[in-house]
Structure formats: C-alpha cells, structure tokens
Image 1 (cartoon, rainbow, N blue to C red):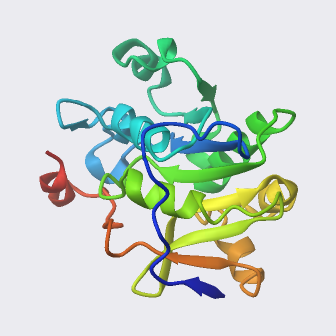
Image 2 (cartoon, helix red, strand yellow):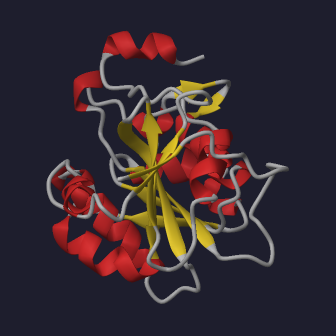
Length: 217
C-alpha cells in the first residue's frame, strides 16, 4: 500500500469541484441500528438535525457531487423527516435488501452510479460523524484516473472514506458480501491502494451502541 503522508488539502472546501473529474459521494445509510434498539442510524440527531443530513453535507463540502444515498431501514421516515428529497444533486436509492449487510448496500449504491458520468465514487458511512469534509477532500484529491483506489488511513490503519474509480466498481460489487463492504477487494488489491493519512483531521469512530450516542452533539 502506498502511503500519502501529509497530503495537502485542496482549497477551498465548499462544494463539488468544477471542471475536473466527477467524484460522486456514496453514502451508506441503510442500517437499522440493531444494537441501538432498532433506531435507524440515519435519523439519529446530531448538531440539531438528522445524522444523514450531516453526512451528505460533509460529502458536498468535501468536493463530491452528485451524492447518492443508500436508504434501507425506515426509508419512508428518512424521506419524510429530512430535506434530502429536495436537495439538488442528491439521489436517494431505496435498498429493500439492506438487512443483508453493508456489502449489499455498497452494491446497490454502485449500481445506482453505473451509467452516470461519475469517474469515481467516494464511499462514506452515515454512522461516522467524526469524519468531516477535510478528510473527504483529502481522499478525493487522491483521484488520478478511473482506476483510482484510495482510502483514508488513521495512524496507518485503513478506514473511511474510500475512493473507488469507476473501472473498479464491477469487481468491487462482485466481492462485496455481508458486512464487509469493500474490505475483501481492498485487501486483495493492497499493492494498488493509496493510503491517505487523515488522523490529524478526523476520528473514525462508529455510532454502534447506546454508549456511543454520547459522541453525538
């Protein structure tokens, strides 16, 4: 894996980059919050709004557009209780098979991007509010071609967001299963994977348990 230590942040942050490659944001937000008593993570409150709205803004501010959002648990409530259906450049993807795990949600998201003009997808998880626009922008800057493969690194440990060039989507989708997402594909292509250190600008914790809710603001 090729590290990119101290990767400079593109400036300014603040929206999709015009005139360059189209890097779509792909937000996986289908989880049902089983360990949270069945509370869908997308609707957890954070900074005065649903967590899903915060994550979409992070992707947009980090330079991604359009943003495809994979919905699953309580999808009707997410549509009714958020501004996302009316947000320009935001595509909501209903995934009835969300309970099969993150891998199936990743496949649904990549399928929704197939046939668009996106050159790459930058994948973010809805339950990681400690990852902000700075990390998204930094990983997005690792795009070099439609074969791009990059991921955020936290003190050398691979995490999210993950950048997948369009030429890799089909193979990633074939390998995605259960809750592993793109993990198997990334492990099998470690020699091509660019690691972008983000530990100085983000924290990759998950909101999985009732105790984790204390991290929300």
